Amino acid sequence: MSANQLDKKSQAWSALFSEPMSELVKRYTASVGFDRRMWRADIAGSLAHAEMLAAQGIIGADDLAAIQRGMAQIAQEIEAGSFEWKLDLEDVHLNIEARLTQLVGDAGKRLHTGRSRNDQVATDVRLWLRDEIDALAPLLAQMQLALVEVAEKNVDTILPGFTHMQVAQPVSFAHHLLAYVEMFARDAERLADVRKRVNRSPLGAAALAGTSYPLDRERAAKTLGFDGVCQNSLDAVSDRDFAIEFAGFASITMMHVSRLAEEIVLWMSQNFGFIDLADRYCTGSSIMPQKRNPDVAELARGKSGRVVGHLMALLTLMKGQPLTYNKDNQEDKEPLFDSVDTLRDTLRIMAEMVGGIVVKPEAMERAALKGYATATDLADYLVKKGLPFRDAHEVVAHAVKLAIQQGVDLSELPLATLQGFNPTIADDVYAVLTLRGSLNARSVLGGTAPDQVRAQLARHRARLQTS
Ligand code: ARG
Image (tube, rainbow, N blue to C red; front, side, top):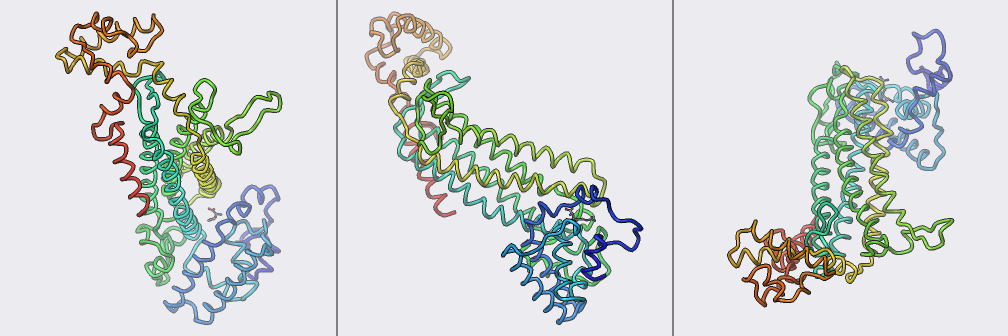
């Protein structure tokens, strides 16, 4: 069938069919509206397949040359925006193949030898996703670097650390930011791991059972930069676990972004006042003139919902499918595409915004003082004087109670008062009751003491610069 016939009949399989597809069904089943964005992968996959077919003597060298020439023109047309995408041709694969046949005749019709759209689409999605993964990895590194840079300036900035959203113990603001660096570093590891399983070639699985043509699957895979081939043809065309895994990675990363965004929103509120954001990341209110809202952070938090939703969509789409390919799989694309787009935009904007955070150290320190954040330090002090920890805990609870009644910090209670709670308390207690004393004391590996934080910063710097 010629490309014109294909056009007219609107069907790639038409001989068997006695009536045309209804308009509604056509629109319902077509995917070209969204899968056309995989056109580069589709052409690359076809060229690798054709090159291998020629090398195996399945098509002629002249056919290969014609296919290459036609594909080069198609790529140009798509790039220039002059390619005419047709809903009648259902998807990106049939659109490109029909145009190829229009341009180069029979050679175009030979391209599909030993191939099915089932292994073709699985190949396209993997190639497309691999490129997106390679573009996302540096953004994750940038996000970490942005945090490291703010952290480097804030090793000695004291933030109240919270548990249960109650002031718990003072921490270095840098230490707090580096917690997110750890999270994003793990996300980057996960991404690199997902890539290994994305980067395998389904080509040659054909419709489901493999093909009777003497294909060299390894050769086509190598041309496309795949690390190997899928070893079972049924699995190759049917499973989308690689996409689900990516969505899992994306959801976890967005969950981390969302936690950071939530803290930024809190920190910027009047009740905290720990940071300020540049005006360009905020918006005003149409009714309340005093408002500067952290919309970017809120949206980043909100957009985590859609990415998690996509993970659910992909899992649900897959779970009921018997082997092998089913059209359900066409539904993998929009969630996957949107996960990539959302994550990419979010990482970019969050890294930029974090880089511009204005830190307000006095407000942070004031909040730490207000919350009796050094109470544990007083207990530890008493333990060093010989009290069992549980008794020390009790003594300090009484001291905090009195301080609250008097509206003062623990460090503001006179020595005589403190000694009333326990006679072993001496003048040196005031050193541990300061926020800085508390910070310095936590110099265990991974703790918040500035020397530890500086060591971690150096490690992250070295790691991020070499990656
Ligand atoms: N557009 C289809 C998809 O995204 C391509 C594969 C169609 N294969 C088929 N046998 N109908 O899954």
